[in-house]
Image (cartoon, rainbow, N blue to C red):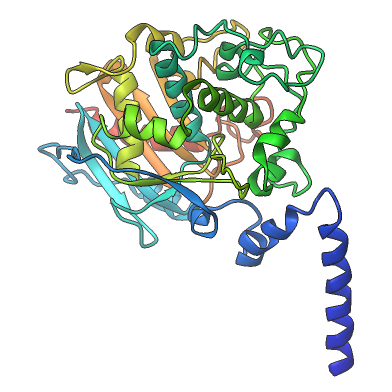
Length: 388
């Protein structure tokens, strides 16, 4: 037994040493924070294992009003089962800016924080819009190189701020969540996230086609930070979080001494407050009668930039379902804020698992930008409000 333990310990020491001295040394952090916790990828409460910047709560916090039929309509049996299978932690349906239905699972409640994952990309795009309003950034057409002079690649001088928000940067990037050796995984654990992003060159002509890349949003956050002179956590808190009356939140950081937010993901907040960003865009950038985000910017954000990629605008996913236009925030593992503006409704779902199948039955997601779980949650909300 002792000999086996010694041999195992020696093997572990060799592996640790090899990792520590390789370009994959970030995996040491990944092993301790993710893989040894029983997960194969980032998870909803992993923010507890990382350093975070606080997003300060508003002095006066807004509360969602309850619909007069609040929680009087039940989920159908199929959706109840689906929530359990997909390990949902929060499911909310909004009608006319009030909560019609609200249910939590797995010990979560209305105040529980969970990882936004890529839903936060929509919020980063909103911060870009405000930086343009405040003239820190001249326009969507201003070049990234003005703020990030060390940007690399043959097309580094061509990529614009708008190219970042619309996912048309031409950046070299591999969007793989379950491969521990991918640049996406590295971005989750590296000590110096800025350096990692700068080392991903602009290798294709920007502004020509949509290609979803987390590194592109991270680059956009670096631009916003440089342009405004404050952290994006501070900028979010002052320009959106406090004006919208939200609760305190946390934004994960890399472990560099200066600390950069993981802006492609990792804002820890609650379901009700995530929903407020859907309301902000649904109401054309106006909050409680005050225009805090330019309405023309909101309108542009919710239109496809490229005809051949109708699923994406500037920071938001776009779709048409059952004849109604839909826009949404989306995140890894099935985090959704889905807005149906025509009927003044929203559906929010947070959870541990998403579906991998396309909305078209029996097919893998493949090239389809939307998976079928989105429509299960949408249908549940539409069923509740159809007779209201």
